[in-house]
Image (cartoon, helix red, strand yellow):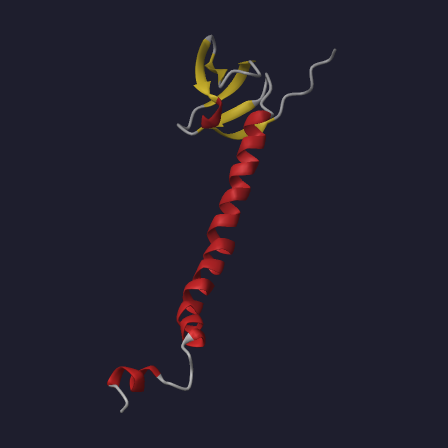
Length: 110
């Protein structure tokens, strides 16, 4: 007559709404994670790319290693910048390692 599997499945409902209710907590968790973690991370990455792109000679920068120095040479198509960390001590660093610009240089007068 009625099999145990058919009796347990709830013959009145086809099961589509049950599936949605089961996935609803996962969907809510993903939405919350997007707004609390992923979206701010994307904003920070975009701001960092803009900061690195706008580096100019004379800017005082802080590197990810904690060095503070002044940018002495910037080549637009190069991934490196030259930073003076002490008198006559210059190092080349990768642009993406600059984490903060402390003071902006004044624009170069043409």
